[in-house]
Image (tube, one colour):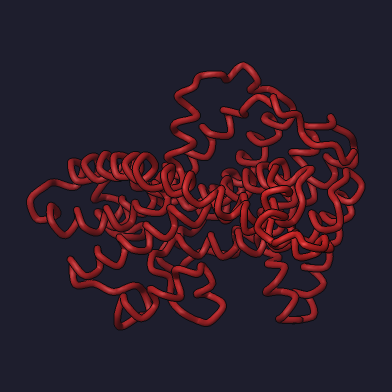
Length: 375
C-alpha cells in the first residue's frame, strides 16, 4: 500500500466547500465580535446573528479535521523533500503578503498586535511562522492556528520519511494520540508542546477519515474516529474564553458543533458527497486561505474608516464583501504568481540537495549533473 495516489484522482470539491464554510464561521466570529462587542451581554446589539457568531470559532475545529484528511492525502507516495516543497509553496507566499499588509494596516490605524507595543518588532519573526516558538506575538490573532498546523507538518514529515503505508499510518496515529495524553498527564512540557494533545484528536481523526475514504471503512478506523471524538469534545468544552462564557449553553453547543463536524467528515469519508461537482466550489476553496489570513486586517481598517458612519449590519456586509474581494485579489495577483515563481526554484534546490548525495563522475561539472537529474 505504498503506491502513489492516482494522478487522475478527482478533486474533492466538497472539501473546498467545507473549507470555505469553516473560514466563513471564523470571519463571522471576528467581525460580529468586533462590531457588536464580545460576549453574551452584547448579543442584543446584533440579535440572531450574534448568538451564532459567538460559536464561530468552531470553524477552526473543522479546519483541523480537514487538514488531517488533506495533508495525509497529499503526502501519500511523496518523499520528505517533495512534501516540504509542496507545503512551503502552498502556505508561505500568501502568508508573507498577509503579514506585510497587517503591518501596513496597523500603521494606518495606529494600533499594535496583541501583547506588543509595536507592530514592527514581531513582524520579522512572524515572517518565519515560528514567532510563537520564541515568545513573539502574532501579527494577526488567527496565526496561532498556523503554528499548530506546523506541528502537524513536522510530525507527518517523520511518517513520510519512514514511508507511508496503511499500517504505519495506524501505528503513527495511535502512538501520537496516546503519547500526547501520557505527556499531558505527566506534565512533560517538551512532549506536550510537540504533540499538542488538545488538537491531536482532530488531526488523527482527519487522517482516519482519509484512510476510510481511500481504502474503505472498517471497525478499527471507526473506533479511532470515535475515540478522537470522545477526547475532542471535553478538550474543546474546557477551552472557553471568559469573554465567551455562556453558562448552560456553551457546553451543549460546543458538544453539538464538534459532533456535527465529525459527522460531516464521516460523510465525506464514506463518499456521501461524491455528487458534488460544481466547479465554483473549487474557487471558494482557493479563496479560503487568503480570506482567513487577511480578513482581520480588512475588518480593522473598515471599522476604523467606516465604523462611525455605518450602522452595524451595513458595516458587517461591507466588511465581509471587502474581505472576499481582497481574498480574490490576493489569490489572483499574489498567491498564484508567487507559487508559479517559487515552485520550480524550490524543486531545483531540492534536486541540488539530492545531487549532493550522489557520487560525481570524473570530469563532470555540477551544473551538467543537475541538468541530467532534472531531465
